[in-house]
Length: 173
Image 1 (cartoon, rainbow, N blue to C red):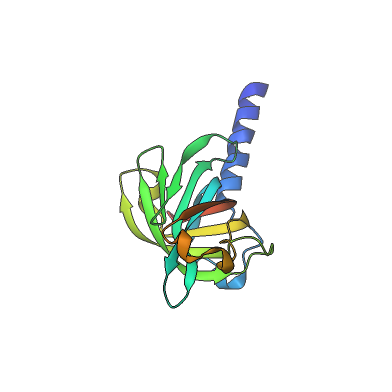
Image 2 (tube, one colour):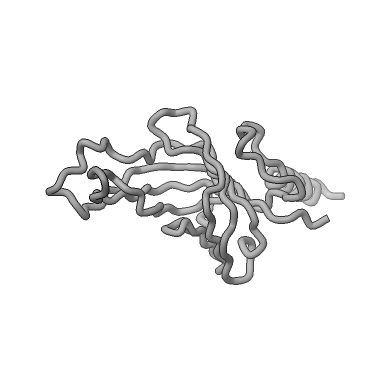
């Protein structure tokens, strides 16, 4: 085998191994059920959008995320938006619902989550996804409740955040 072919094969094997191994720092309550494999890892950067709303008290309520997704090499591969929904550039989408939460190690960061897929559309990488992790979050917490006042009712605020998302599908073997 020539050196460039060997390097390409080694790179492919490393990429597959990196995609196939879930992160080692997942809290016990966020573990994905047995029988699922990691099919995609993505890094998101964007905002968590909050709206000042009236309820029992005035409070900032999560509207949803607005973020871009990047692969492990930094290339743009999709978007993440209200739903929560993830859309891949191949046209496939998955919507999820949080099934477990764990406080982020950084106090100003949104919690780490295990989400269960609730809806799919399109054919592609997200069409088989059953579970999603949101881990390694930075930022995204709502503003102080005291800043949601009557004159700001209905106002939206975007709080910068980043996170790593891991997408799991039923194992194919």
